[in-house]
Image (cartoon, rainbow, N blue to C red):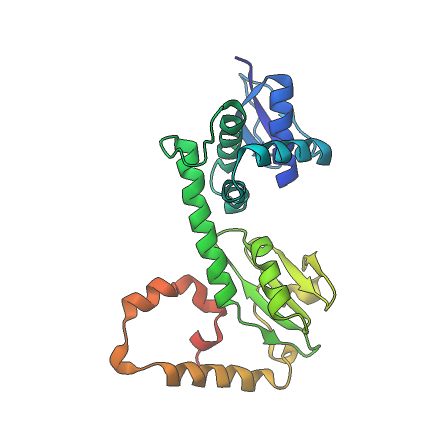
Length: 259
């Protein structure tokens, strides 16, 4: 069996291209790493793959013929999970789908199938939490800005939710962990980075006082008062509260800041 290391640009398209090339060359990956993280090996060659939209499209269409919509979603969620060795896991799952004569979707006795489904649930849960926990702050330039720091790369998954819900407002949601964000300008949403020094305060999710809209402080106070009054002391259940709203999300929640 021919084996090698593969490296790619980190894109989902690039990862699908690796699947195409591996089958084309009959050379199977020992590991798959992003180019910036790939280490030289003494025993196996490393093949650098350039993302190719046509080859990636052919792989995805092939998977669509063999997998359910939920399984396809699970593969994409696994990519967004960024968990260790997720690329090899996706490759193993795809190879199994292409080489099996039967639908593998529900075959949880296979480690790769079970692991992909477990990751899908974790990423799906994080997606819902981010949709619920985003707290916008109105800036002096009338932009509604929110910072998040999710465990998984869920920005692509929550984009549609906020486009539908806040279609009449300009907004930006920035992932401070991955250093990129979404900017909606009332017509479309673009991926943005905040590399300019003047924008660094937004990049770390903390706005200076002069950057706030004049009414923002009132909104935050109202938000804190609202949560204070809906909280019934006799029904306090800290364990349940932490389970639904883990502390790692609190730093960007208005209701959790000292009023």
